[in-house]
Length: 386
Image (cartoon, rainbow, N blue to C red; front, side):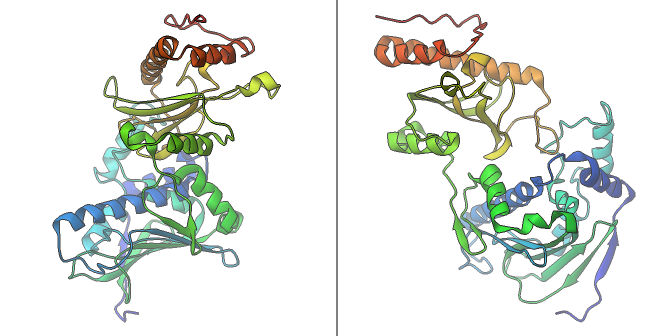
């Protein structure tokens, strides 16, 4: 450990306001902090991967590009480590000391521009890291830059409006976040709990994740790959994972579109709809993602009601989400997405009617068994074909 006295920095007044909003009122779901920290770790690792393409001299060059999550249930401590790009002293202050790169005052002005809860701000301000203070009493961030010349640093705060930075020893390249949970949130240190949250929100992170030393099974984001690079078996296995299903899909629709917004979509038509077996009304099953991070597992109105039994994924890097990534606020955009996706689905049905009439007619039979089916879309008028 360094014998130097830690530097103490006071957050600016505006930053304190932002931190208070993030901790006390922005997020409704406390477990979101796991998603945010893993997303940040993935981003840092991706930056290092790109840096390796242009730079020959990388500190700790032999480290695997993976994310490690460890927990101690007895002490209520969680550690999330990446071996990514790391941070210099200046970057620590810029990234963790100012909260919003565009300026915390601008953040507050934007937050209040259309009322106290104007939340269409994600991607403009980096506040995800601060979600950890919802559940943590204290947070330490150990980091070492990828550059050959650099310091091993520790940033620490308990969220009270100040933070400290000190030099330490023996820090590997990347960033290690260590935090002690508040008593009422110590359940998050349970391995099963952590794995459940990671599976829900971060299954498609492109780098390996280890939880308490055990490899966590991540899944390829097939919707971002080219159709020619995916086998039928991979499509079927993805469907079973995403839909928690045991049967094979009847057919699938995989496409990308640039208008009215850039989206990648992968939809599956199940062999049966569960409503016909008396399981009650099905909730929407096409999940909404932003850059492979789950935003909403059951977004309303993304697809028309008569396609509520369809399963799959819609992903867009351009979504104007709320700042906590918890929902989309732009209903007009949802309507546009609905129209684009529905039109493409209907086009697929027309192609099935011509080339695979048995598949088409079987699909219509599944539709017919939807109780109180509402098919108000003006383009929707399928009939059985001979």
